[in-house]
Length: 611
Image (cartoon, rainbow, N blue to C red; front, side, top):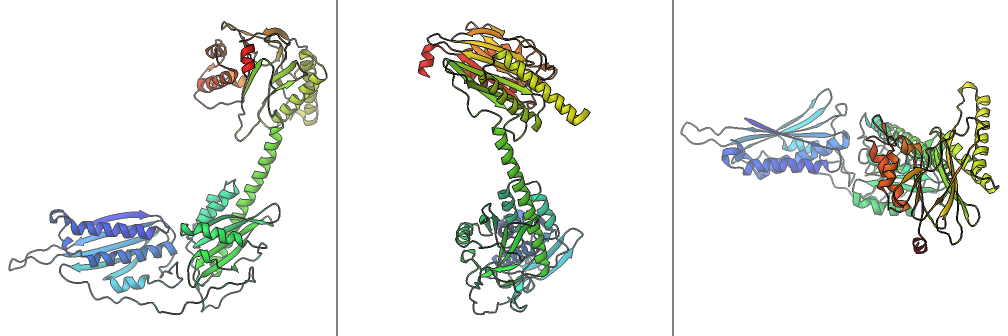
């Protein structure tokens, strides 16, 4: 009769503790369970048996973490002996066999004794297994390797005599503090143990997969540090070069998280004076890294991509260890991948910074304040990560009593469209300051757009794309002592502005006209009206009116008018947000175009004084 229990564990510094807890809890539960449910061999499970099983399990799991570096499965199997009655009717002593299997997914890696991560001394490892276990062995499968042991116990009898290996005592050697940096040299082979490679054959592939597509250099160093610790090192530090030619400590990681902060402080107090050029350069062992009193081994590797220094990678392991050529090549490959990921992230950051700086020039930093008129803008560019799209807006003063406002949309959403938005906005400002009225501004901008399109076709041939522009442009003129404002507005291929009166009536404030850039000879006409106190002028782009829900658009059956009417009584900012939310809620999918809302609301004299 037997029972089997299994537990999966990740390959980290908590794996051994988790395995000990699992085996101890399982055996203790069986030993203390009622006889009716515990099984026939439970009486043979003693405290001594539990202690030995937990100890050997801990050694095997630690060995698997150090040398395999893959996820671990721990299986505990109890084989119960039946306490049958003997010929005289007396009950036989209970017997139990405890078999623990520790499996990893690195069958190509041989089974070896461990090294104590705190002292650098060889651990007991498999010596303890051989001394305490009834039998043990290794089973190799195609995709896994299992190290197992068996402990047998009989009720009322002690376990078989032990022959526990003893560690030889030797005086502690003083910490090695080489000059910084120094010429790399190999320690004598007899002096140092081997720096173990716990990465496994899939380590480089996993590194490439995790770092691929990372566009933030701090995220690259964070991932790299946690990949390297504890697989290849007990701690890791990564310096990155700065634009000023210096270095900055980007990331520090340690198997003992309590040591991360003091280790960072110590490393920052003594930064590298120059980026090293040779892989595996010995480095002074920081006191805060632990491993007292003998210290440890720290090695530095350059981070170089495209023949440009990106920084330096520093790895540390407890004990005086010798890094083999195989491990050196492994770390060099990791360092190259980290350096390339940092280089890519920096290129992306540089281009993004330039792009955002250029985008910010396409739109005004602030909207001009209009006497007697409250203004609000809601602007959402469609492109991910963009601050400017094909839509643009502006409100600017023209003297003491006159203000101009505009809302436009360039055909397309690519960078070419963004370049046209800046050109159109600045050209409108220039024409207005030269004294051109609404109709003249539209006419001259239309001529400029048509000429630009003709030149693009001439230069690019049939593949060139003409750029058309829809625009709503108007002027507000305020007379001293007279509430409200005189408004003159015109649209070119743009959704007409909606004028809402104080009684809730809504009407279009301009007539539809031709898009700008199609025919250079088109004449445009403007409409004039008074925007009285309490009245609102709503201006939107087609990202609002053409928002879709199935076959329906938001502005079908005067949908935008109803939305405006539902917001009656709201202030300018609240009304702009109300329209934006209504556009989002209309469709079930994401918004597929730039979305812009401009609200101009004439306020009463009392409200204007309070503002």
